[in-house]
Image (tube, rainbow, N blue to C red; front, side):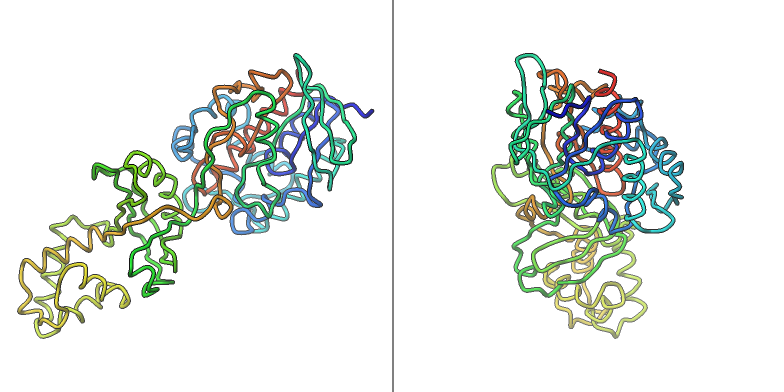
Length: 419
């Protein structure tokens, strides 16, 4: 029967980094993946360019991981965003910083990052077992014992690291296998839900497709809670789809819909779009007035076409209760105020999100109260470690989730080896 110091289950970013950290400390390490290729999710991250980390200062980095990011402080003490950048530079992967602190390989190829990581674990002598599904993690009365493969073969280890990811992007192998093994050890799995996922709306103007494919640049998207107070707002780009809203700021807002739905006890959630985020409401009204005065013989419809995308104009008129054929010189102050209100708070009623399988990130996971934050070891089963997306941690896209994966993976690997 084969025996190892550390067995890592899952060849994604956290599992690869856990293998590196454990092997660097002299442990005999076996990395097992059920697929034929390691690093599949890493290979498609960042639009195929691999956003390896984000260089924001630690507190700001944590703030961009709204799903229990504070749990990561100890792991970041071991291996933070600067450590991640230095690690890849030492592997010969030159990095460049883009907007908002995002770090990419100069090559713009995720494959170079995956190859470097796999090359590193091979150089460290890590044994690799692909196309080998694990069916069970073996537990003794007081410690983890190893794993059982689908072939029926048992592999022994002093420590086992579960790095199997969540349930999002299942085509990369993340199908939630690890939750069952965690529960078998006595762990609690918090409710799983999609985050960083497109938003669904059943508004008539969404279902008609009249705005499908229309992109809005530099706007603010806001989620309002059940009491009509602002819950979260993000500024940036978005796009209308045949089912609702997508694009960077829609994805960031998506995880907050569930919170409102649960408190309100209904599926509908109010959102709004600020089309002129640099203007106060009175300044938006003044802008409209100036446009009217500049072209008093133009219709309101044509004046609006100079302010908004053409496809958005009919909706702006309808929602504001305005006759678009009225001449600018005859446009009432009441109408001006209504139009300004639309520009600053275009209403969108939404009804949830796309499925967990369509999400970029899984919300929920292994309950963090049952994990040692400084080691990633289970508090319930000695020798059992968790890292990456299987934990109840999730952040925004932009290098935050992969930072959490690398950091928790490295922390789990180093302590599994030292134990």
